[in-house]
Amino acid sequence: MIRLPRELKAWRPARAGVLYVLAAAPLGLLLLWRLGSSPGLSADELSAKNSASLSSTFSDPLFAPWKLLEDALTHINSHSLLLARLPSVIFGAFFLAAFYYILKGWFGRPIAYLGSILLATTPLFLILAHNGTPRIMYFTPVLFLAAHRVLSRAKQRPKLAAAALVIALAFCLYVPGVIWLLIGGMIMKWRLVYKLLRNNRNTDVALMALMLLVLIAPLMYALVIHPHLGKTLLLIPDHFPGWLQTLKDWGWMIIALFARSRTHQDVVLGQLPLLDAAQIGLGIFGGYVMWSRLRTQFLWLIGLVLLSCLGAALNSNYSLLALGLPLLSILVGMGLRYLYIEWMHIFPRNPFPRYFAILLMAAVVFTHVIYGVRYSLIAWPRTVAVQSLRVLK
Image (cartoon, rainbow, N blue to C red):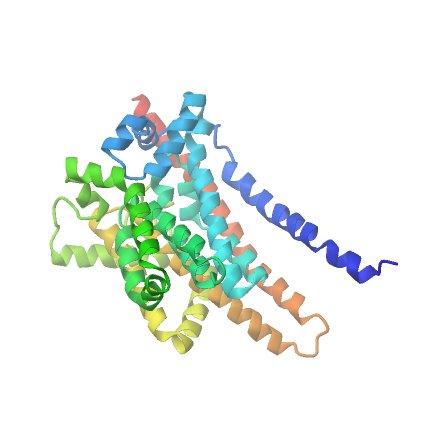
């Protein structure tokens, strides 16, 4: 005789699959909304599409993963607006999955769901995911964080985890500006890097180094042939504006995250900030927790966010703020976890404190979703329409 609890236990994987589908379906529909029905490709999208051929990718391999996928989809139908923008959606969904994996391991499944929804409905993420340009690749640092978690949990298969880390590292090196964050992250986690090298044989370390060299060989070749690409890769501007102007621009990029942007750009609606009140409040809570318990890691995290703001300031490019957005989103997730624990303490006699706390957090997230979706769905079609008219003229 089969007991009922055993039957219910057998349904857990199916139940988890249903929950994943129910959570991913609305996000998928949101990312695909009007993707192929806008007035036409903007000037930036046309330029990105024309530079995505295989031959041009070898001469300019920056954003190579995005360009290779764009080239493959363009060969299916070169006139489709949907296929021209679909690589950004695919990579955006990939980054969201990696971010969910990180939060799930650190804070649990409910926080991972809500935190991923917060990132997915952030205007900067939605706008870049809708554009047929490789700027969505600025969210690539989240892959390195996910590979770090795989490495830290790998006890039975360390070689597989090391291979995942090498692949993520090679993936990141093709995106301008990410190398600075990688250097900072490796300095912060130098003990883990040393442990990885020490626990593997010299032959395994040599194979990992060889694997990395093979994966980044096109990039190294292009840097030798075209040395100027190195400045773009390192986010070094052609003309340095001066220390005073750089400090002003840096300050404006930081302010653009929380208060208002200095000018309107294609990723900004008017002069609205890129983060809303819900994210800022949760980030403050998360920062308080991290400062009280992981002060060194908090300072490193803030330092890397400020470094991404400096890169955006030097290049006058608001899209580069996406380099630090996953790090800020981790603080937001930590703030959600803090509220969850505090609300559990506030209602100790409630028979359903866990679900009530999740309901309260979902209400906070819902306010952000309304703001972020409305912001993005107004900003993106308007920007594309204006740039398409410029192309027609």
